[in-house]
Image (tube, rainbow, N blue to C red; front, side):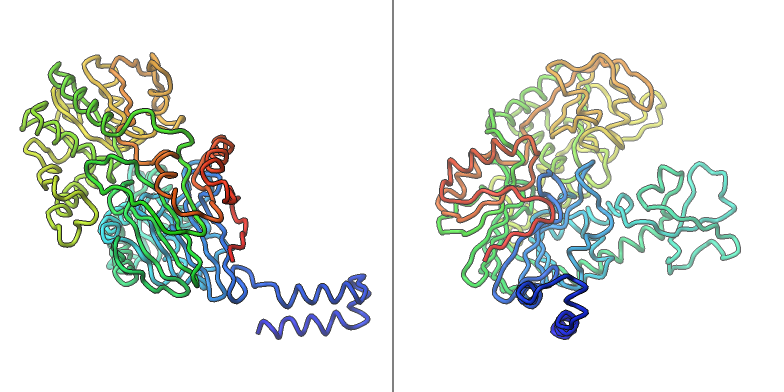
Length: 552
């Protein structure tokens, strides 16, 4: 078919009409025909060649989506969501045709690395998805929980006309196949995006939500193939593939690919050294031709992770002794579990009482705490992903652990008392219980808010932690709230390695080329200088979105 298209074009161009229409001379015509015949089709490469381009994470922090193109098709490393103004999550990129994708590799299950996977599945991808064993178990929880927040474009919904006027109305997709309690004559149809339902007073009916979750879980079960760190190389289409664990979050891996003797490594998010929970980073000693490395940090870490964690435990104990109410906004995935693990370490060191009350407000975080306890209790399956010899399942479910944050007290709806610890999502206090805690406790001088992750500038957490001192007021829901509570921000739970650590990991690999991705534009010059100094023989490239690079 490809040659038929070109031959038809050649016949027309060779005619006198074709030559005059395009203003071509015979010599120019020959050059044009050479380009037409030998240029690769869109999204693919000519035989034996290898191209790289990106659909996210190029000169932005989020949206991780990297593509390797061979003559046989496309191979994706990550399918992440963009965050904020980094980019659009819908529609699926046209330059990455779904029918050309041969395999997908997932480095870890943070939304900015896996968040567009449900969209890719909806677009019709039915090929293999490779991820680590822990990532698969985590994905089975976090992906279904995220469905109502994802962008699938405009969709058609209906609700019962008998529910009109209610503050919150249950809705169903027009494609719902279950036994709907809404008979056709009573259905009111409308179109919107699923993620906008809540802001318009709607929510997915329980049976509809469960159906979508079950469909997603069935697709994952059918399409996911497990690769454990340390496994021998696995043949995947044109490549031989290996995973290497990194302590970013549980299950995080780097992806190494061998293409006809040409080697590449995609780092994903490399974790920092010194994690008491996750395994240490590997040290690569053999050559790697191309490195695709994250550049989240442009500067080296000032405080070692081990020192920062110790300070966190000591400060936490001091606040509890002083009868403070401690609110810890933390993301449901991994950060909440890391915080609970450090609280348990404080108990083991007699800094906190064994029955210290810790309320965990997020249903997803609670499910993940139990899953982490299960992981470390099954060394035969998950030992490679944790420092299992020093960890006990009870570290994630200590005696004082309480599921949920609710009370019948209208003055304190979350029910968190002085002398108690509350782990609340979201991590930047934009949503859910952490935002409610700001409304309830921000004016209390005997409450301390402990932020344990990066805080985007335009979020409540970002505004509270922006300066050396917190602001006197914080605007929430159009109202100004006095800030009398203590505000503390720690980098002790940061999940990204600094440049010094990354350079040390790959110092012996002698790369020909290094692509720097997942970075802020202002940090680009400093990162380029740093990597040129450490790898003087390598070409240092900061790719743009969609920009094609021939690797071989």
